[in-house]
Length: 630
Image (cartoon, rainbow, N blue to C red; front, side, top):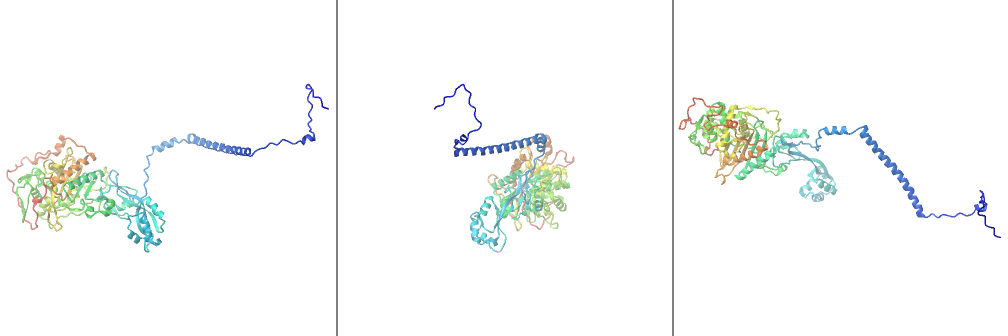
């Protein structure tokens, strides 16, 4: 029978808290979990762990940054230390350690420097097959000679150099060969960045880095003992290049076999430039010929020719045997045995002292030297340093060729008076020129940079009055004499030309072989620099109208040098002023010089030639002075 439905208004029946056993044991419904769900749950669990770790990491990082900022801005501010660091001067760049110091010019331009490199050497005892090793090695270093390489890699020696300078690529390639017995060694090489420029001054070193010539030899101990202290020379590489170019042009134009040049500070004796041509590349001295290695400036000795007439005039003025308004007869030759002394295109009359220098009279210069006398002449030459080696800081110097004390006679004094019978180096002439114009103080030439605040010591050899008169006469040579082509407007150049025939190896003079030289200074009202230019064996050309004398050859080259180096040295052309005019005034008759006037009762020069005593004949044969210089 079916029970009746419950009354909707009746309360729900009480539910018993205790279930009946039958209901408790009823089966539950099962939930099926698939494998993707399990994988997804595992990934979520791992991600949750990683996020926690990342959160802790970022927290630590930002915490460290916060602590660092607090330390830098609050606890220990960095700005005061930064300001102190900026106020300190910058530290010089560190230099690679080397065993030899760098050599520079006066402006810091590097002339010689040691560069680190890698050398390759072999231990022949460790090499099994020298021929095979040589063949493999020559694939990388083809410049090596095979037979010599095999010889060096064979035998019982334990050390033999193979190559002294390898590039990093060559080192890697040789190392990749894996040949037992080949080893590398850290070494250094002396390098000369300027190449040919100043090669004779710098000199060079041998394969072991020991100086063998020039500055490298003179200062070998100093360069090795103080490798971090640069050696600063007095050279100015800009002046050196200008001088070399000008001398080379003169050699080329007149087809000379060589030449020389010097630029010197007249007040310190510092050599700013020294050129000897032909020259060579200092980085490849082994390829240089004997003639290229020959330093014509300090080793070559030549008869100075008419440049020595300046010394003769200075000597006579200083001893008082002549005055600017005095002079000598140059109308008749001086006969000596079978030979005679003549003038080259002479005036054939009595000449005042300024005329003697401007017209370059051999006859008058010979009379002037004879008037001083043999003993005083020899003593003056010794005082001027013309009988000794110059004490310059390079080892290659020559001793002048002069007559001995017993053989120095009247004839020698007369010929030396116009620059013959004595042979000196070009540096001797340049040093004498600087001495004549700087007030009369002889200073030995130097290629070291000296402190301008500490003047160099010197020896007075002529008076200031004599130096002043010589400067005026040197200016006359350029304005009125044979040195006109050396003139540079605004720089008031003064100087003296000199042409002398060359002597042969057995004595005597060589036909058509001459030295053409010019010694000068500028500006002559206040001399600063002396310039010497010489061309060895110049040949005439069409432009020189068949002449190869110094006035055509050396003087123009000197003018070119001065025009190029004067602006470099900070000298600007000056207009003629009354002060400059008074400082340079010198009439050809020697009269009316400001502050140096002739005596009131000075006799007038006679119309005819003045008689002079003829020199005593001498047994030593002399060449005809018609071949002597201008």
